[in-house]
Image 1 (cartoon, helix red, strand yellow):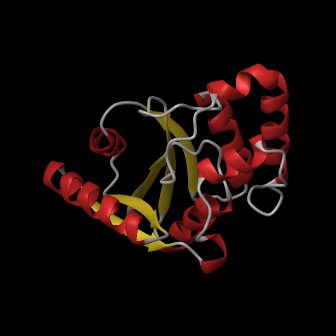
Image 2 (cartoon, helix red, strand yellow; image 1 turned 60 degrees about the vertical axis):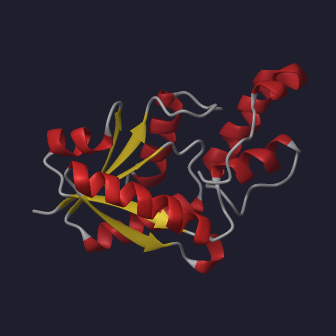
Length: 173
């Protein structure tokens, strides 16, 4: 059985992530969506919140599992018996970064399969979703309804002062 791992921060999960996950599930026998617990990024949602959002959005897919991990991605794959890393590509910048990561992962142990994001999601990143939400914009066409609600609740909980604690530094996620 071919097991693939789709690793990411998913802060928050958006329709582009779900597009890649669902398409990977049609290619591989088993797909593990691996929510990374210690990225070098400023996160809006905790690991548990990101895990719950991903589980709720993909819970109906029989060959998809959602998990968390820390450390080196290829070690996680090794521990799970996975052979392939799945990544999504949107723009040229993604290709350059993913190409470098794929070569590194191959050197360490695993192949990477990159899926091109569907055109309707090519503009999406978690940073863009957060930026629109922080500015009070509508994210309904970017994220599932429960994620939109979670964004509103999180931003309300942070309050006006807390928004300065959500630096948006990456267009890559």
